[in-house]
Length: 200
Image (cartoon, rainbow, N blue to C red):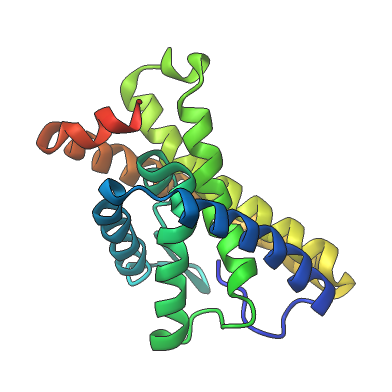
């Protein structure tokens, strides 16, 4: 899911990064002290999830847990995920510094979208297990969609690769759905206050 430095055109990088910078600034400005600990936990969760690689054909897929982070943090996902992406770029070489704004958009925007979808009346009518499954599924779906669109419209030679990414990551969406469901059910059982706060 990470885009490396130099992959996108300069224009695409600057345009997407500007959107991320605005969202990050707004999230940082509004970040409540009571949410700092949870945001740090979510950063660690995102960072560690990237180490869980699942072989799939000639490639590998890994967890990102964007939906779970989204319903826990909302807009603050931009702060939490930025910290994790920065550490990944500096320590592991995932993505890059110049492309961190693009990667932040691809990862944090889906989390923010899932947060709002989760709070709609229609969504809350679903069975709880289905809700939690969709939280995990939709986080990865939107991240894959944004990655596909950014690559597709950045350079003509990326069109085929972009469409392939969307197809390959269908299995990732399903896995994230089930992982998200079991993780949120566990959180609900052991620390329900977190999910209760997510409903506020």
